[in-house]
Image (cartoon, rainbow, N blue to C red):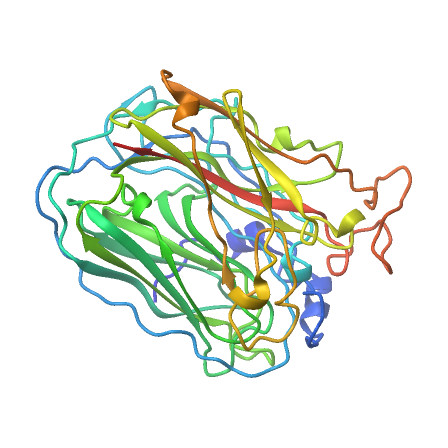
Length: 468
């Protein structure tokens, strides 16, 4: 089994204090059907600010090399009463590519988000970034050779029934796998098949924030990871999802390392389940896609954005960036994952409040309400707990849908794109330092307790994709 490159001490520093008595006490509390996702941990993390770099697909014309493997199985269901909780996920940016004029390739900002609490979120930390510390982007990499020939149909399988779990002396929430993708050839469609199965001791009964990413640089201060997919585990049953990742072909080339993360708090020996068995595979169909992607540029690495605290404005956590446009591209799109977490606050934000988010490119705003109200019909069936509740951009037992915005017209005639992120105005008057404590959901005071009252915030990550 691929192992996490981090030591136990590093994982404790990044994700949680496993010896926190409050956490341990909550671990011993059995879940109840219908509960609002009690949290199992609060992530405490830091991020290094490293230069933003361009990830490009610099491959020569010609055929492709096939990677063997096939995906296996959908998740098996296991009965049981459940409720949810979640945590955080790590993510950040960068990779390899063509020559760079202004920055070296292969580095990026490491970031680890943080959330726990009802349905998952909670107090949590972050400032990480893929952009330069000043907020500006790094140098522009070359677009590399154009790939004209269709690739050979193949399936690449990095994870097969890979155990992901957590115990006090064995933290396997982060698991890496080396992978070999075809280094040349175009692909009409690349589908990521991801499934979860229940171990012999049963699946985790709580909903957890989870992700699959690509490691592009390693650093003691924090590895650089680009988020490919985000999902929320179901309540103690298996699951399977399919996601179109054709546009991420510039990342899925040659020898790479993929990283799986599930913020489970159970493992072998726990009365609440053994964690998860993860399967993931990439089905690659050779041919010409509707648009050929030539570069993937990290804009904002995955981070926790505190919401509703005047002392911590969103612009401080997500600064303006000026991203150089890739050479060889003629059209562009932004791809973002945004999910809201935290409960018990004014308006029950950010997990259970419906808010408009805005990405502004140059002077052009693109607004979207980040909200999922179709959980009863789109999430994995057969769950208990609160999986049918509408939430801010996610459902328990469902993959998180990326928000994609075409920005070609916004950057026409320019060599770079200035971008900002914002959310509808809101102040959480139910917070510890509020002058007047009010607006809390019934039964809560203004103190965050890591359970029924957790700090509101959003988990955000964004990349820019350039197409030929």
